[in-house]
Amino acid sequence: MYREVSRLIMYGNLGQDEILMRLSDIFKEIEEDKECVQKEAHVRALYDQIYRILDLATKYGFDHNLWQCYIAYLLATDENPFSVICEKVGAKTDDAASVNQIVKQDMECFYKLFHFDFHAIETLLEVKCFSILTEYHSMAKAENTYNKSVSEKVKELAGQLGKAKDAEDFFDIVTNFYRVYGVGKFGLNKAFRVTHTSTGELNLAPITHTSDVTLEHLVGYEIQKKQLVDNTEAFVEGRKANNCLLFGDSGTGKSTCIKAILNRYYDQGL
Image 1 (cartoon, rainbow, N blue to C red):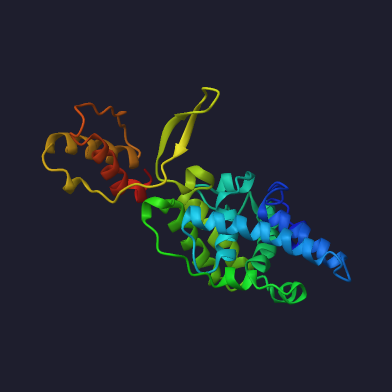
Image 2: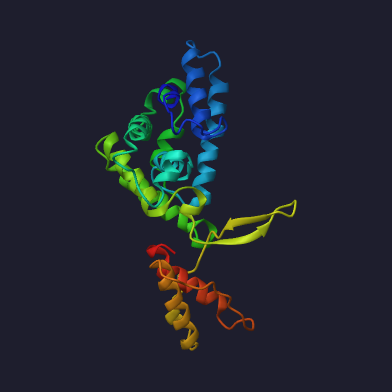
């Protein structure tokens, strides 16, 4: 594993505490420990990273092959010069040809990591943790207990990557994902709220769950709903549009309108 990770260029700046980087270091230590004299320490180190993958799966509602979901999540969230440029545009074929070749080399590594065979390491350490991860059946949970927006996108990406025939397909799938959704928290989440940090600074925090309400669920307010629809359609179509401020008494449908507009126009670029 560490051989593939060490070859990453564009995606190589993941941070030493990232799960993939920690696993890479652990696998290298295991290989260097020829007689496996530190077996229990290796197992403990692996279990720590397995726990982190399980924690991530719980937070985002991943299931089935958690390892592949994790790799897909990593690709979907890593904001590097290439992924940011590809956001909403996709990979260019002419002036960006050189950087494409660099990223395609990275995708060869990720393709191998995505299909990594953990059998040898499990046999050596006498564990089955990775086998469980790759055939994981999660407990049923309410949608408001995990980030549904991130969950749906990452699982969709993992499913597409699972059908990739080679690294070239991998490259096309990932860059198309960036073009359609973007990258990082702003690409994966539908909506945000303004919060304050402990030091008083403003922060945009993802809203982890938005209900499936529609404008049809809100009875009345036809004039106001039409104004919102017309203005939002102008915005997503690139025409002149106004900022909106909804005001009114509690329970009159302000939040419902916002959620409904989001649900209707999110796929169109809102």
